[in-house]
Image (cartoon, rainbow, N blue to C red; front, side, top):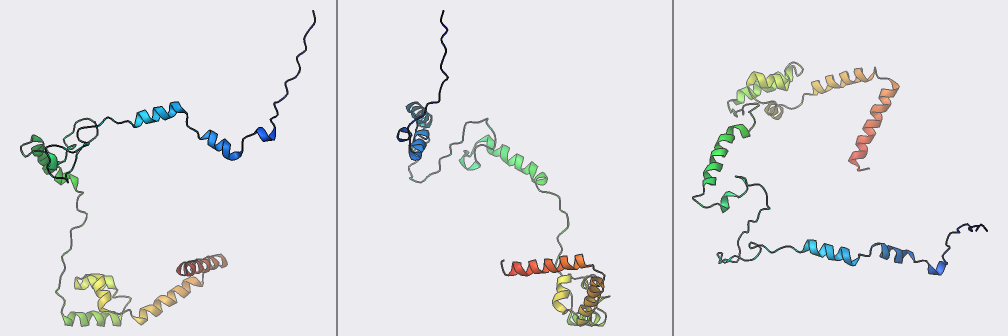
Length: 201
């Protein structure tokens, strides 16, 4: 009995002129079959609802149509505007709002402060005198507590003392004198970045 020897299968080599172009291959990949087109068209076919068209009860052309999706009934589903005047849901909603008014808002963290206009021109002169004599001791916060006003009002009344600016400059120079090369270089780089931000770079 003669044995048949199967020849090895060779890959099918298509001729270049038979291969589809890249544009044609994309068009073939994106082509929609007739079955998928029919299925999509069937999904998009929505059954017309009574509220889709114009109602016979509304004679005006402009009116609001409230057509909520099908879901579990809730008191808050239908807005109060659409409820009849004698509907029990109006009373239920008003009662629930009254009960939740105290619980809806968070507790007050700090009581609102009342503005006081009790300072006289003599008090303002005293504030400026104390600020000029010893700006380090009589800071804005301390003057505000002493005269029972806000620190913003103190900053509006008093100008920045040149003595305090000089003291702060000396303190900063003393702190910077203890910096190493790495920290000094990092602070210089930070200042350069801030300058670049102002130039939008």
